Length: 108
Image (cartoon, rainbow, N blue to C red; front, side, top):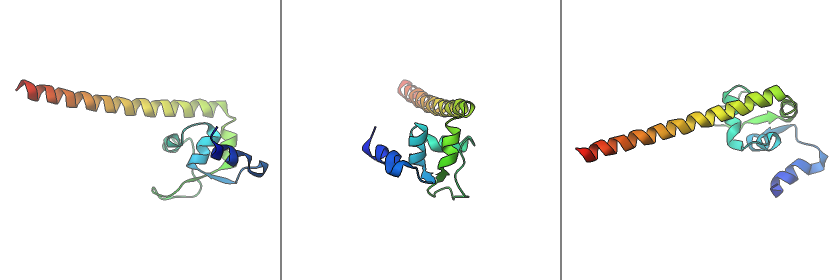
């Protein structure tokens, strides 16, 4: 475990009331870049009504409760798997289209 994560989790024996996306990822044991995936899937809700480009904060109590719910964990894992599978498929299909275009240009 990284030192900064360890320090965050052990400060005064209690967690802050709200956490950033990075810290939420630490609490859920997932990568910080997966937090927007969970928000887009409506499985995690940031506090307030933040603009798209603002730092998002999450209620620590809510994250801890969700982390105990096996159904939510199942849904969140599937949402992350689905997002990355679709993104990788889009990337590989774009690459194959580029390869096909290059092959047709070479053949001409």
